[in-house]
Length: 130
Length: 256
Image (cartoon, rainbow over all chains, first blue to last red; front, side, top):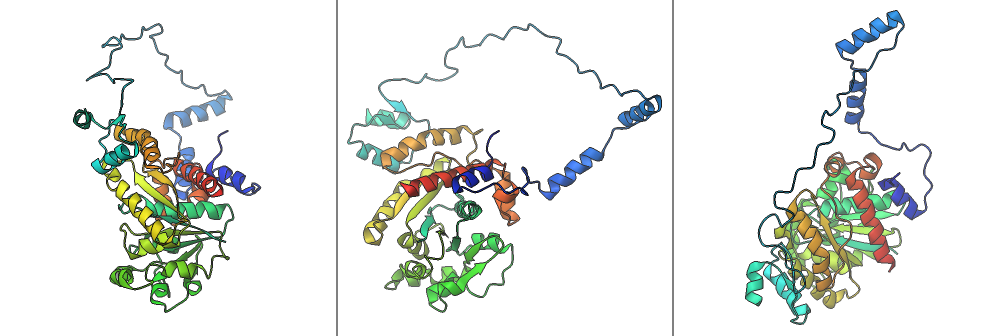
């Protein structure tokens, strides 16, 4: 079971798990909603339950509908596996971020890389550098 | 001795208060002694801690005006200990920028209480004025929240340069604990691209980027609005888990 936030913090702090802490805290709204949902029964189910009680038989669950299509083939990719749109990414020589960095950040990265700029930010800046 | 963390970014709306409050909350959950100082005239951290009550005798402004010591300004609330902010802070910001020693008021004040707490978290306003500078001069570590949005990256480089200048000017031990991605929506393509690019940008700028992004999460907003601890009321939420992971990363950074 994945650790929740309390467990992570307790583990780091070396704390024992208190016995009176419930696993899951509920807000008041969530609790009220849960209780309201649990108390609701549909008229059909209530009628069946009442009839079953009289006859002393179990109420059967409604049948689940199954998917009639069993061996459906996966649809063919329209583009036959090629890049869906635009120019495919070019690998090797440079990387391209798809976000446009602000120019000052771009320039700082360029400065810190000693001029061997292999990071290009977008097509426009790439053209300028080339 | 208290480890002092400032949560700062000159850009507004990047979750500085949310981050300050939840880091403080997580540390308090781990039984650490934590004090939060609200240096923002918007007083959002104060609103959370006081649960809407405004009746506070003394605030951080009293510390700046030297009309009270910092110990007298600490309010013990159900949420935790806080030195409340004041909306009048903005009226006096220029004064402290120009006054000799005006940028070291918080640093000097914290010397009087640093043995009483394990952590001091400072929430700052969205501008590099007297109050953020006070926090930067007083702090041991800085966390810079950043939204996963295009315009949030604007000015990051300048802000980091400002931090370097302030370090040289009087706090050479200030450590940039990291840049924190906030309000991250993995359904949004731009958010994903910023998240993917940020570690590499951080490496080129020579700064740490926290591995944990804080995902957009309504439970975070709800717990703040209710002035309740995210960890005690919504521990299984994405927000609680993300802030828990963040605090674990912060503690690892501090221990390095």
